[in-house]
Image 1 (cartoon, rainbow, N blue to C red):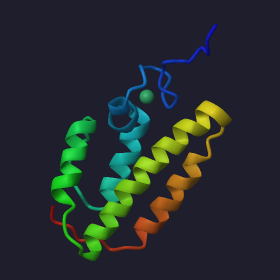
Image 2 (cartoon, helix red, strand yellow):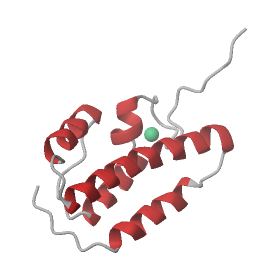
Image 3 (tube, rainbow, N blue to C red):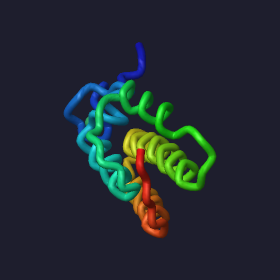
Length: 116
Ligand SMILES: [Zn+2]
């Protein structure tokens, strides 16, 4: 007797949920991360967790305001995806979209000129 857990991704319901799938391979997550990258004026394609994490570690060093904003965007994105997943898993709400719109609005206030 155990708890049955649905192995499918809660965001797309079409693939097994893994860390890499959830954050950077799921169509839903890719769309969100691409929007954030576009808001930050960063042109790059989205890859799996390992590639994205290595990019983040290598690119977001320093203490400038732009780097601070990019770190904030990265952290907010990870938090947003995890919250959205948990909302769908446990609350069956789509509240994460509201959080994404808040992140989107904050990033739109900055005129980012980034060369990474
Ligand atoms: Zn998915």
